[in-house]
Length: 276
Length: 234
Image (cartoon, rainbow over all chains, first blue to last red):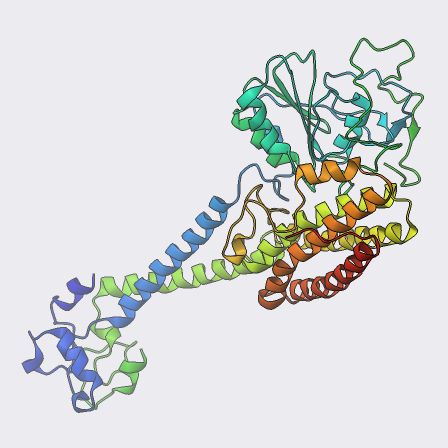
């Protein structure tokens, strides 16, 4: 554009001196800036303002484009945000169910859970340690469900189908990570099942990318996808919950006196803001 | 524009143009019609884009994304120190619940409650800035220019199992040893943030951590000596 302008016809110019015509317009413009060139012609000036305007426009377009692209590129689509409170809902195969929190049972009671493994409902007053705990033995459902209420992601696996490298892969996602716990779950219908409060995803392969999508979407999600944001995953120890000696696994069938999922016979802990 | 308006020698205009200065053949009159059109359109575009950019900047201040960038000293410190604090809280909770020594129970409660409060501040800021609330597993201290798989002072899984298996005075000694090493290990990160953080609140928090944890480390060194035990090597 600029070159087209400077080599264009000069007929619209005015006040220019004929000797300057045909000369390099850049030289003419340059001379104009010197003190000796005050009377230099202006009809062949390079349109610096026009060029500048175009440059500024292009820079603005580029800058804004980069700003938007950069912003969208650095945020994982699975990270929860105020615009996308629960990204896990877009994971193929995810199962969700709404549960009411804060209903507790005693260490002697059992709950007739509606899912296997359970991912919500009444639970023991003591939560299982979920501060990156890798349990080598299956753990009582009622304690694990309480940890889900605190925002933990629980990886359950069928010990007959997941071992070796696959088990190492899963362990690396859990060991030492807050709000993560893992335990074997004999009788699982799929090799691997992930639970978060109200969310479940069953997969067959430890390298399935949906595992990380599930964890990124739900672990530490501050948007109320689990009942107790900020609750602890730490264990208090023997007499409460001891990760070295957790309560024994209690799979179905459930006894006749197991507490139902309609919360009849459980104690609501919410009113006093208690042990939750 | 400035250049053309200051250089206005008294030369008679050949072609009149009502928008021109009318004295020296300014850039406007010298421009062909299509260039004037492009320029006008460009000016309109600039105004629109400037408005849009201003809107975006204002929106950025109020919506989820503002504050220091990912990888900055502020964000990196808060993410790493959140992980570091969580483990201290984990050990302090266990010690507070299982020790039989009132002095140790008091110390453990002090560490647990203060670091839980600090953790809440750090998590709150990171959430306001729409940053991940903790470091990616196995990738710490990149903001200090030396990414490491594990932060100094962190107890290993074996350390934690040994600690939880201990009772009585052995539990207290294990707690003091692990927590003293934990405090000392975190010091370099707190000092780096106190010196380099850009957000005053982050600077203030990290400075206060340096002060309080240095004092606690002195206390724990004395408590270890009283029990005839030595600190762990770093």
